[in-house]
Structures are given as structure tokens and as C-alpha cells.
Image: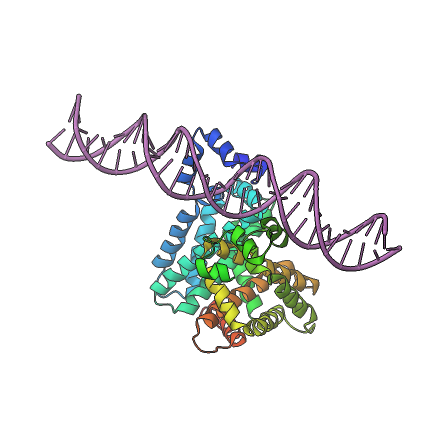
Length: 172
Length: 172
DNA sequence: TATCTGATGTCACTTGCTGACATAACCTGC
DNA sequence: GCAGGTTATGTCAGCAAGTGACATCAGATA
């Protein structure tokens, strides 16, 4: 992260990262599939959190309620380390390859949530759509939160995005 | 496309592509930014189509109506070459790097549509959300269409996805 | 015809990433 | 404690993607 933030992602070689870490270059690739993955190792935990939250929701809840709960909980967790999230976001925003990776991670989260919904008996299409909607609202709520110069409130921003998404989808 | 479809994306070298095309390897990179981009050169035209459709919609239309029209029109165009779309989809589905590229292209389309909506006076957040919703419905409609063993009807599938998205978002 | 421009070729080079094999650290059972 | 297995790390050679610099060639234009 330090190197990426300082000189930029492209300008940082794996050799430099390895040297800074006191390891051989080869060892880096044993810990991370590629140079980008360093910034996305946290995605697995986030996915667990989302899936667990979906799975544990009361059976009376509708798909969108379940998804809302999940992304809001994720927001609560992310919010804790705002400075880190911000720096990471800046690094990613400066590089298209990293944005690609970010997008596929989000898509993976969506499909994991969709799978968890299907487990609850939600039908295929609805599950996929609810998950996509949740991720879209999360994404836009996250961006608003990161831009906010004050402390901000990520879960609230996510909820508001979802409300506005609903309004927009209903033709308002 | 032939090479990618035959031996797979990873197993195809740029040297081979260049040879098949009767060109030097260097020349390949003057036509395409990288090895993946070959499969996404059509995205620019699609973006033009979407943006134009958004811009030309009657001023009375709501954001979601405008976006719906745009993605349906895009569906009509894509539908014409179903075999090509299918083969391309299969190649992409077999390779994570290509999926990443696909996702960033879709995200680019979404943000282009959002910009076109803002041009119409739609406020920032609503524009972004409407565009995201449109792309999500397009994506899922497209997948249904591509899986369909019959001739299928892409615009219809997209519309149905949007209807179902609305139902889901409203808590059904 | 002379010249200008754009597309292509050639070459050398960096860097990401992988496979194969060697070595060191660390358990685990006895 | 120690023999044997497992896991993390090092070393090295090599492939393929992508880039910069310079040369060349073909067609358009004055």
C-alpha cells in the first residue's frame, strides 16, 4: 500500500515490494496471485460476512430486506477504518487495472449473496437481481461516503442509495 | 476470435494472432491496447447508441423510462448477431481476465448513460442509480437470452428483468 | 517529381508471472 | 531427542505481454 500510494501502482515493481518486505520476488507470488491482488485480500472476509448475514436473516424477510441488511452490515464494518478505505480507494481510482479487479470482486460478492438467497428458496432471477441491486446501492453509497469531507455515515449512505434506487426504479 | 475459441485465450499468443493476420506482433498492439481488447472493440459503438438514445428521449420521460428504452434498443441491435454474441460470450466466460474487462466496459457504459442523463437535468445520484439499474437488468436479461436454446428475444428478456427488478426492489 | 503523412516492420528491453528444484524451518509421533 | 514429513522460502531459467526508438514503405498531395 505504501509503495502503491507513493509512486503509483504501475511505477511499483514486484521486485521493490519484495525487497521492502525482505522476501524473494517468487515468495510474493506465493502469497498473492498477482500484483493487484494485494489490495483485495480483504474481499474474502467481506464475502463471508455478507453471506452469513444473508443466511441468518429471519425467514420472514423479503429478498431485498435481506440484502439491505447485509450491505448495511458490511458498511458498518468498513466504516471502522475510514482512512484505510480512503487511501485504498484513491490508489484504485488512479488505475484502470485495479478498477477491473475491484469490479470483479464486487460481482463475486453479488453472486455469493445471490447463491445465499437461493439457499433460502428465492428463485434464481430474483436472487441475482436483488444482489445486483444491493451491490449497486452499496457502490454508490460508498462513493458518496468516501467523498464526504466530514466523518460521514456509510450505513446511512447505503440505505439512502437503496431508497433512491427504489424511487428511481418506480419511475420517479 | 477463432484462435481464442479454438485453443482458449491463455493458450493463444499475440505472436500467433499476428501471424494469422499476416502482421508483425508490434502492429497488433497499434490496433489493440492489449490482448483482451480485441473482444471489446464493439463497445464504443454500443456506447454511442446508448448515449444517443438517452439524449434523444422525449423530455417528459422519467430517468428509468429513458434508460429502459436505451438498453432495449441496445438489445435489439445485439440480437441481430446471436451466433457471434454466443461465441464471444463463451470465450469470455472461460477466462477471468476477460470477465474483468467485460465488467469495466459495462461500468463505462453505465457511467456514459449516467452522464447523458445528467445532461438532461437528472441529478447526479439518480442518474448513476438509474444507469446502474439499467445495466444490471441488461446483464441478467442478456444471460437468460444467451442460455435460451430457442431463438429467444433479447429486448423482451431485458424488459422482463427490469420488471422483476422493480418487483424485487419493492419488497416482493 | 518531391515531399509529407500514416501504417507497418525491426529490435531491444522491462516486467509480470510460472515451473522446477533446492533448502530451511517447523511440527509430529515415537 | 530424533527421523520423517510438511510447509514456507530461496534460486534460477524462461516465456509472454507490452513499450520505446528508429527505420521503411505506400499512398496522398502540392
